Length: 97
Image (cartoon, rainbow, N blue to C red; front, top):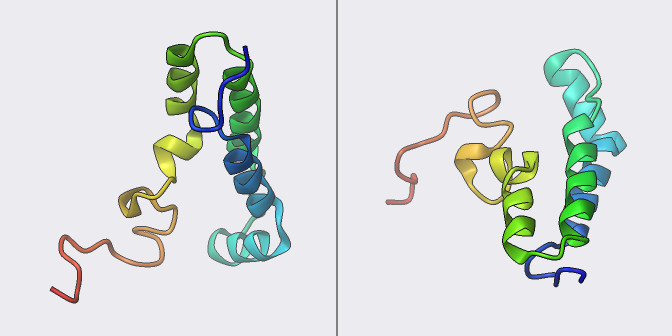
């Protein structure tokens, strides 16, 4: 049985991959690091997300999703931002406090 979107949302992983291969991101990556990004982790995430989406067990699907590059390195946690420590320093407390 296919997993629901609240368990596995393929759009998130496709959006992340398409952002990575986009010209704006590639230009920034070339400027910052001197080379283009291969976007291999994002492509692996898409394949893992499809595997999780087609899984019969929701717990197995969640475990697969938690192992993705997106969940471990990006997501909505500022500490996991790819530019944290490269472009800006992560503060312990926000500046508005």
